Image 1 (cartoon, helix red, strand yellow):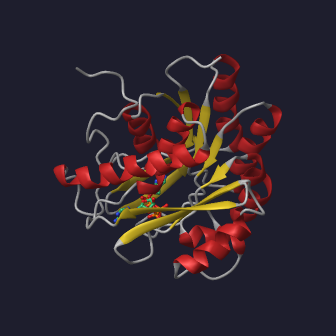
Image 2: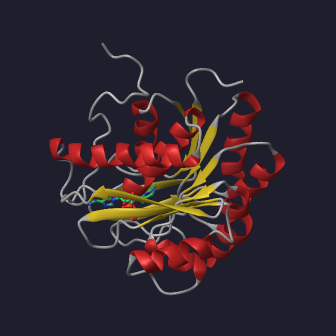
Length: 274
Ligand SMILES: Nc1ncnc2c1ncn2[C@@H]1O[C@H](COP(=O)(O)OP(=O)(O)OP(=O)(O)O)[C@@H](O)[C@H]1O
Ligand SMILES: Cc1ncc(COP(=O)(O)O)c(N)n1
């Protein structure tokens, strides 16, 4: 049975600059009043300017952390981010297959904002064929959707509609993120049970976009246990992210693409702070 404060798990890589990966996920969980737990997949030497090195953990180490945690702690939702290799992807899939878990949100992290590959192209097949069928919602950006579908990148919301429907053949829930398009709004498409919901928020003029995808997927996982539907959870998660992007003006972190700011105002799901 779920306590009032949901326990949420992130399976992801590290970011010393505090903007992406488990840093973004844990801050998001806390800001949204969830209790965060962590399984680390890779130690990433990165800052706001880019990725310098990746120390990848092996599949057994990641699966060991996961089973050890799940043997003891009930988690109400899971967010999966950077996995790093086909081996780790398969190891996580194996554990998920053995347990009754859910809801599970998968951000199919493949390339960082700075252009560094975080999942080798050869591992995309394992992600698509072994892990994606086990999760409830995938949240690809446009290049990731193109990689998963083996086709060109969407250049319009119309293309996005077609690609969201194609991705729904792989997973029951698809949130196709349009942050990489231009235009006054940053439009994402949510496809659940065959129905598309268009989610529009104003595009914020900022360089502080490091970790937006991590923040959105972890906000969905944190909110899903307390929302009636996926549409409600995703809509509120996007509102949260847009506020955190706006509030990033208060931060001056690093010399590249800085992080969003997670404590932008008292969010309704936060514990009373008065
Ligand atoms: N400048 C912006 N203003 C408002 N929303 C944005 C902006 N940039 C991205 N978003 C939103 O942030 C979320 C992440 O989108 P994006 O398509 O950039 O994913 P991503 O590439 O996985 O993110 P990341 O930069 O963390 O890798 C989406 O909801 C998108 O609409
Ligand atoms: C550990 C980790 N996970 C995910 C990302 C992607 O985030 P971004 O595209 O904003 O660099 C990252 N850079 N590092």
